[in-house]
Every structure is written in structure tokens, then in C-alpha cells.
Image (cartoon, rainbow over all chains, first blue to last red; front, side, top):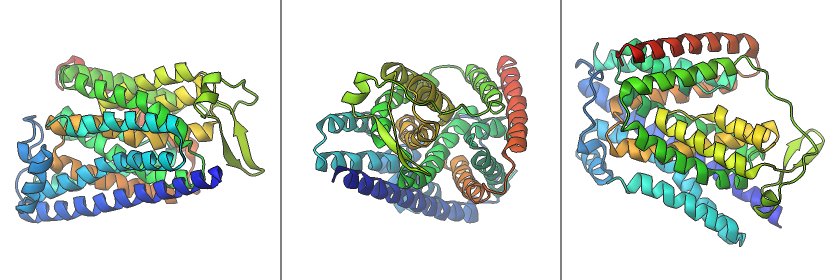
Length: 124
Length: 278
């Protein structure tokens, strides 16, 4: 019974990872095409570091800017989806270990999830 | 150079890196940052940010396939991810504090290590290791598929492996790479996990490790969407293509070419770092 559970969890995790990467690639591509149509002819400037503006760093600000028609913010939404993919995988593992009543690994997974959430959300 | 030309050039470089990385199994991510900084003059912090995001894409894509085949050990991965994510956070915070010239030198040293490793043969699998009581308590022992059916293995050196994983996470967060090679050393050498299980579980962990430092990089404004966009799309396309051509490739020749390219880049990064050009 347990082996079957582990096997099924592995299949679902595999699909979750694939879907996350595919979805984020589509969003990044969409934003990239829009950006290059609009600003493709302008000179590129990435040699000097100035730190990205708030529109491209804050979770809510990125979504707002993307909704407002900023194509680079759409790219950033795609990158956020990409970063969220492994986080979603860990969150799903927590549910799976819960279903298997594996307490030790529920604790382990909560620890990993807490570190990840601190990194992604704790910075803002 | 216009934005369009820049994007096309970066996507081509990233595509080649992803393609070679998948063919050689060495991970193309290590060459992205030096290529962007040395060839195109991109600020090293933007280059590291873009490379880090592309690492999540390739590792998640590859992990999807490995997990389904049953090689990766999800429990080993999750347990060691405690160490790699804490390490990744430390590495990312460190990266925001040390000067870029120092970053370039450290990056170059890491590249030298990668170049050296590409010459080395893959180590043999070890059998009959005595189980570590800690491994048994954490249910780390497992099985993996072979031609003769599932084969059991025991895990040793849990504490040493955990410590090495913290170091691997720090390097990953500091330099924006997957540091898969370090992860495999920890699992294969210290914990005596079968090579195939080590490599696939390491790949499985790379995405989570990179996500832990990506949050910090994003919050600090190190992820420039205009740089990351062509890098992520190029690496993804290249590595998918590379995985399809795996059978027809000559890994020995490829590894040699890859090793020389990485070695040259390493010396140039170290030189530019000391000269204060980066």
C-alpha cells in the first residue's frame, strides 16, 4: 500500500513540475514577444547595475504592472511562476506525507517550506 | 546593440549552453554568467540573477522525467533540502554584500573545479555499505530500478552529507548556479548513495535550492526581466533539444571541449576580477 502511495506521489510531482515549467515558459515568451515588438529597436543597456525598480521586485507591484500593460512585468510574472514551481512541489509533498501519516517528514517538509516562504515573501 | 539584437544573441548563447549542458550532463548553467559578463559586458549581478532562474527551469524539467522513472529518492531530497535552502539563503545574502570583483574571482575558481571535474570518470557504485542508524530512523534507505528489478541500497554518513549540502547550497546562492556537482559529491562520496540515485536526486533538489535564493535576488532587484527572458527561454530550448540527442552524442569529446571552454572562462573571470574590470 505504501509503495503504491509513494509511486503515485512521484507521478503527480512529475506532472506538477512539468506543468509549472511549461506555463511559466509560455508567460515569459508572451511577455518577451510583446516587449521586443514595443522596445526591440531601442539600445540595450545592462552593463551598469542600478537595481530593478519596484515594479519588477515586489510581488503585488509586478502583478499590477503586468495588468497595466508593462510587457517586462509580464516576463517577471512568468519568472515568478517558475520560482513558485519548486515551492508548489514542496507544498504538495506536505499533503502527500500527511496522507501517508509520516509525521517525521511532515516536520521536515514544513521546515523547508518555511525557509522558502521566508525567502520569497519575507523580502518585501 | 538594440534590445532585439541583445535578446537574440543571449538566447543563442543560452541555447548552446543548455544543449551542451544536457549532452554532457555537466549542466550548462555554469557558462551563462561568464558568457554574459565577458562577451556582452552585462553586470555580473544581473548575469547571476538570470542564470539562477534558468537553473530552476532546467532542473524542474529534468526532475519531472527522473521522478517518474523512480530513480530520485524524495525523502533523501526533502531531508537534505533543509541544509541546501538554509545554505542558499546565506549565499544570497553574502552575494549582496561582497564586491563584484570578489564574486568574479570566486566564480572563476568554481569554474576551474568544474573544468577539472569534466575530465574525471564517473565513480563506481559501492555495494554492501553498513547502514547508518540515523538513516534508518529518517527512512532514507530505498530501492532503484535496474535491469534485474528493484535494487536496495543503504545510506551512510548522514551528518557529513548534511554538512556538505549546506556548503553546496551556499555556493548555489552565492553564484547563481545549481552546484549539482557538489551535491553529487555529498551524496555519492559521503553518503554512499548509488550514482544514478545521487545524480537524479541532486537534480530534483536543485530547483528548490535555487528558489530559496531566487526570492532574495528578486527582492534586491538582481533579476532583470530583459536579461532573464532570453536566458531562460534559450536554456530551456537548448536542454530539451540536447536531451533528445543524448544517444547519438560522443560524450568523451564533448566533455573535453566543454572542459576547455570552461577552463578558459575560469582564467578570464579570475583575471578580470583581480584587474577590477568586473
